[in-house]
Image (cartoon, rainbow over all chains, first blue to last red; front, top):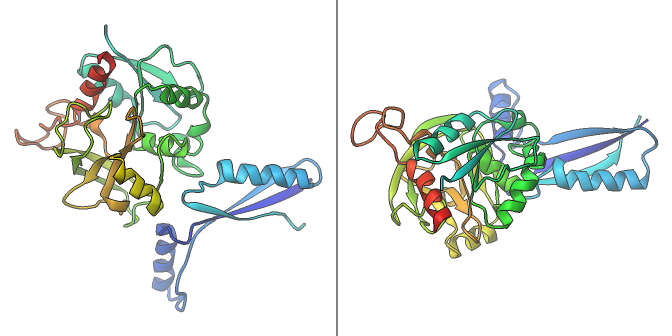
Length: 83
Length: 232
């Protein structure tokens, strides 16, 4: 069984309110020295067989169709998970 | 002929019954549509109501956009049928690419529930033809992911083509680019907005108005507009 990991991040030019909330909480808890936090998403897609080039291609397509919205997000990586 | 206006219920829709009631209040016939049923049952127009369809999982509107009913709504909208997306419905229209841009979380990071004044900037659409240009209306606004964003080129295009239908006035409640509260497609049959006109259609149940508390009915003309657009 293989697994593909997809990572999606808000576009750099888009304000990330969730990241801002996390940054404020870190500061409050005394974790200082972080100048910024951005929050993204990680998806793990499991497949029945090996992760072939064709599987990766289908995941890439799904990543831009459903897993991310290109208006506000970038797919930053689509990779086979290391066991 | 009584106009038949469909209201789609998705799992997690909240304002479908209010939208149906608004349609009934203005004398049209609301028709319940179901997310899993691609059949639009011969309706003349469609309202995508507010709520948190599919729990807003993934992104607001992202999963609803691929529901069977939306394929039919997209086809019908491209063919000119009037479609109104309110709040979550607006998010779904953006995800479905019937309208440009996207909604992200409010810039102040909190849920907001308030009465909001809007300026009506385009009275040529199927859903706004009974308003006066520049008219100010007050309707409820309640959302978490209400910040409208799009790239500068898209925003410039929307402005140049007069496709900004509503703008927030007095204050920007969520950080939306250029105070945009609602937009339309090029043809003017598809309109999406974050605020809730369907909650301001009956005296006694609307926002506070000049005639006293809860007297505001500024949302009513969305629904009378579409009726007149259908017979025009």
